[in-house]
Each structure stands twice: as C-alpha cells, then as structure tokens.
Length: 333
Image 1 (cartoon, rainbow, N blue to C red):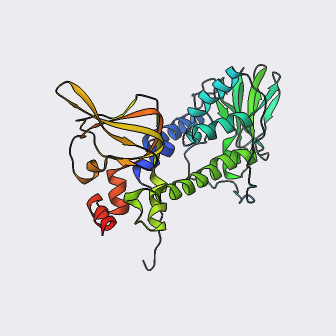
Image 2 (tube, helix red, strand yellow):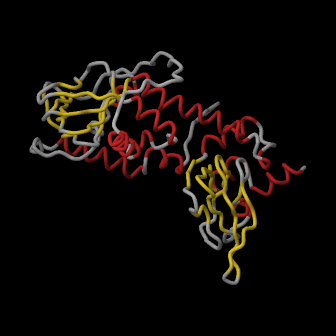
Image 3 (cartoon, rainbow, N blue to C red):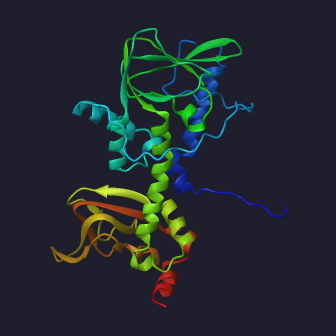
C-alpha cells in the first residue's frame, strides 16, 4: 500500500540452494516433536545440526560481521589422499557447499585442519562465540541443548556429520554444546575462510559469469543488469569425456546450454550412422531451439574431454529476458 518493494526467489533456485520446502518443514517438525516429547531423552533423529523447535519465539541477537578480508591463498594443512577424498565426499553431501566448483572445493579441503579430542572433552559450548566449523572424521560426539535450565541430549554426531555452521553464518552465539562421547578426530575450518567460501566464492563466480556472458554472441546485446540476472540463476555442470549432455529426440528439452570450459561435439544419428555436425568451444551455446519451441532435441551433444557447461531453463530464461525469439531479433537488429 503505497510504494512497496519485495524480494523474491523462484522455486528452482530455492530447491537448488536449500532443498524442497517440504523437506525443510519436515526437518523442523521432527525437531519440534523431539523437543516437545516427554519421553524422548534416549531417542535421537539423524539431523546434521539441531535447528530448534518451530515456535514463534524471539531469536537471539544477530549482529553484522565485519567485512571479510580478501583471501587469495588459502592456508593448507597436510592430509593423506584418503583424508582428502573423504572430506570431499562429505562436503559434496552438504547443501551449503553444493554450489562450489571443483577448484573451490579443493581449496576448502586444503584449508581444513585436524582436531583431536578425548572422550568427555567439550568441543563447543552453547552461547559461546563461534570460531570453527567441524566435520566428524571418526568417533562420536553428543550434542546437547539447554533451555530453561534443562539440558537435553538431542543427537549423536558420527563420521561424516557436521556442526557449528549456524554461529558462523549468522554471527550469533552457539546454539548447542557438543561433547566427545568417544575419542574423536574432527576436521575444522576457521570462521574467516568459512565465510569467504560461502560468500565471496558466490560473488566471484557471479562476476566471472557476467564477464563470460558478455562474450556469448546471442547475449551480447544484454544490459549489465540483465547479465547479472542471468548470472544469478545459471547452473554449472561438468561432464566427463564421451558423456552425453543432450540426446537426439529426447522430449525433456527445456534447457539452454553455454560451454563454460572445454569442448563438445554435436552428432546426428540417421540410418544407423552417426555423423559429427558441429563443434562447440568456450562461449558457444546450444539448445536454443528448445527455448524457441517445444520440440525434441535435434541432435546429440557429447563432451569431448572434460567439459563444463552452464545452463538456464526455459521458465527462468523467459521470465528474465522474454522469449528466445525476441532476444534473437534484438541481437540481429
């Protein structure tokens, strides 16, 4: 009523970043049932970190953190090949880090340092200031939450589980106490690097995408604002040598592709023979026919060597830029 400004997020971006809304609600509801049950002290659900019951209470103070330093070279802590592999597998399962590229993930793995605690040692304490994010390498940790002078065990964290991210993300006090149930080995990541990777990596990639989009022929006519909008919704995927990116005649043709790194080739199958008809290099695009009309794919596109593409679906493309035919007319005007 009067001048009103809103911010919004579409379903595809929401699901990509956080998972489905149903999953989040179920997660909160499980926590609510756990904390409100009178006989559930011995039970624990397998949630990576206790989020607290879904009740309308005032949240503790959240302050703005100081601006982050620019970190160009991450500190590296020595690890075996097996430890690096295990850390990479654990990080890929955590939705917070699902947007990171392979190189960013590798930098993060290098920056983790090992922490060992004996049974009974306190790793983090509720209400204290957060310093590190932790992933359990081996052993078990008990997570306790104190409310109204009552302390309850809410979960046991085991190998691959993580905790400590909320205090770092929101610059607020720890929401739980974590104590080693057995002797444990953990991998820890400091607050500055944690925030840098979550915030700066996304900002840096957005700038890279905007710069990259300037060199894509069909998108050269976009304004800086339009390129920024596209950069925000691009999804990056990497394909191995010989892997199909799209297949001829497939019906689910609603995605526009741009080659970000590497090469790909287009082939057509006819009368039992496969013929190469096009080669795609960095900055080349394909799949625009799927944005122009609802029709099966006209050709196969196969990765030649390791190939990384960025994509945008028809719904997001049309919402942000209008129809593909309008953009082509603008480009060739």
